[in-house]
Length: 302
Image 1 (cartoon, one colour):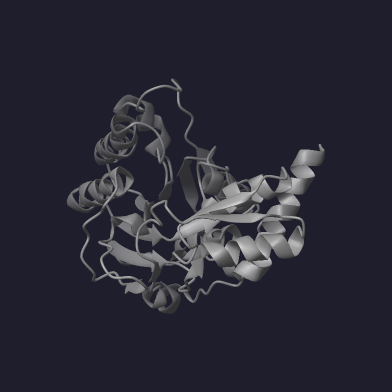
Image 2 (cartoon, rainbow, N blue to C red; image 1 turned 120 degrees about the horizontal axis):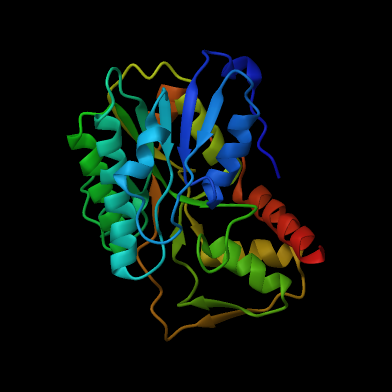
């Protein structure tokens, strides 16, 4: 499934773009979208060694002659050491490579996460001004990577995404939506922890890509930008499961009432980003789940 980009909007300037994390869920979609903009040149970061953290030396040729770098590369599942090293050291090595450049530095657009926020009250609305006190190793890694980039004096934009889902999202890795869709298509029971009323802010992949493109084609006059990128709505596990059952009627849903139901429900306020970049999410969860299921069905039939 491809993301359509308004080329009338895209022809703002000819830009040389670098992209890390092109093999990932969001990065793969972003690469396809960027390649569809004929006025931009895209350079993909390719690791020499698939294991471990990319060294500063690996980034040196990549950062040269770039106006913008989308930094999506990182680790969101693994041991605590893998997650911390994969996000923090990777960011530090990228920073050092950029700082070694003579002349103007590229503007770095970093995909952070809503997991950097402190979650205390249920059904909270998270804003950029709220306390940043992550409660997971991944949140700590993203928070530290943000701080390193801020301290570096490199011009940058920090984008704190909510839960992104959609076609090509990896089950049991990227999103609970992908996991439940995969289970339903395999005829498995959808098992929800607790009463299923805990929810998150879910953003469809096309909307996430349009947000990233909107930043990349903007004037980028600010040297330090911080924004939430989200739907602004809470969707519970029960609502996700019911949407799946509407598409696959034989789907069974089971609640494990004795299991912990997870962190408090929350939504992210993205009005700052919407105003600055003239963006808004277009795909509701009622539209996004059928599109996701269609992609998985097609994949399973191949």
